[in-house]
Image (tube, rainbow, N blue to C red; front, side, top):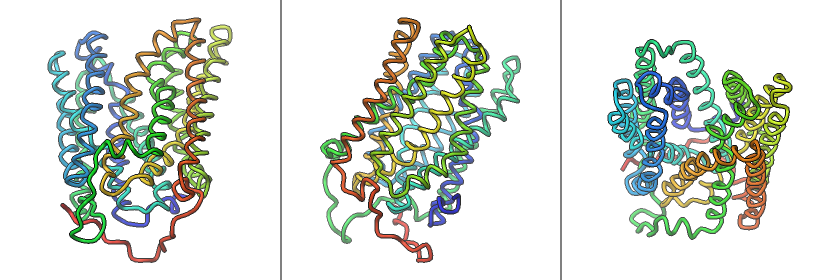
Length: 431
């Protein structure tokens, strides 16, 4: 299954190597930013929250610009400097000592990260055809989670709030890890250039984000993504954790086990799910994701009803919720970017991918803001009802999208197969 999921072109395989290496560095620091800013650098909880929120806001504002620059100059010319900026900012986090310096450094980190995700997705899309993109994006997600899991295990055994140098070390290592995909991209001079469309010398079609938003199927996909991620992904950091600790009354250690179960589920199930999705309707798969996420929240709600009366059952419910949620992620991760790039035109591929990444940024602002008040109402029952209902609404939106797609876009009819033994298509020329 792994060999089948690997992209045909060696350049794409090397890009995936960069993904897993940088993900290990990301995993070193991902769980600890809030703890580092508060317990090590002395920021108050409120100020640390503002710093992290500021990062999300800057990233969200700059993401559309990143998509425009990718289309205009090519992903390579944007991703390379962004990786260097991200590495510099991450390294400087080891030196922050005040609220002001934390804001400045996180601004730098946000500038770097604003175009990396959409740029790397654009590069992967340019190195694969529609028949293999779904498999490759799924494999990319599995490798990302594997790297984050490995990095988290390493840092969990190393960091110590009484020894600031341990945090400084993991941020410096994370900075170095961001340079690995940059170095790999530098060894691939023909990859990531501006994507030409049509005969040589032909004028590129005009268009921008208004053109993207006029794409009715993609607009429906964006609405689906906003509803699903607001009631799904965006609830993990605040809603899931707060409900598990305050309503289900489990310890923070159980929450850590739950997140580990999520990673294990993704790594073990992703390749199997990729294979099962081949030749099946992408919109049906997206609808299934909404149903799986809703099931996960219902299991968490049941854990809250058990609560302190049965600590073991509550803990198992919290862990099961996270694992079930991870299974839903294994369906979403290959289908969403594959469908995005099936709808995209070459001239606007960067903007399509930027808008797709913005979905997570917008929901990341809305989700946490709404989670707190909802969990405080009726012992969390209102929150459970809201997120379950939202996920089911997302499923209905996904089903309504099917009639707007042709069979190839929906994945029900394969594209013209490319022989694995054939010579790979030449890479786009660098801009």
